[in-house]
Image 1 (tube, rainbow, N blue to C red):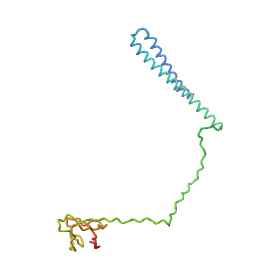
Image 2 (cartoon, rainbow, N blue to C red):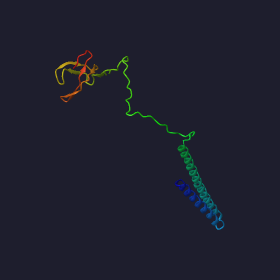
Image 3 (cartoon, one colour):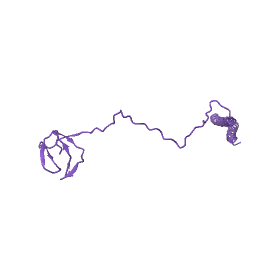
Image 4 (cartoon, helix red, strand yellow):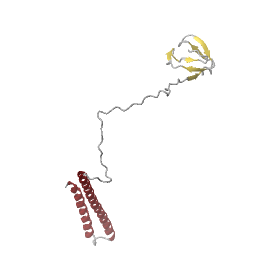
Length: 176
């Protein structure tokens, strides 16, 4: 019964719209000028079109509800229907078992980290070079002229005497 309420409401609305369009056409047939009559007939045409849409909506809902009813009755009676998805029972294992894990292949070499070499160039000393010291602010060991290449070591820089000191290795190989 509840499946019929909405189509009946749509049908009633469509009927009211059609009656209002008809009464509008009957009232204004002779009393108005030609332009006003054309506008009124155009409005009446739109309202009749709206009533047709309401009627089609009501018929569509009735057809849909009927198909659903037939489908439910067929499923309850156990009929096999073509092109109708059915739910198949599934088997669940409780408690769920762990998924197998892959065993590592020992023939494949393991990747190793490649050290990154950071290089630096002595420059900006005005031609006087940079002093290579044993410790920050310590004794001077040698002077590195402009253009010398050094390797920056991975130790963190230190602050001393208002300068930032970085541990380097010279081309010869001495760490300072």
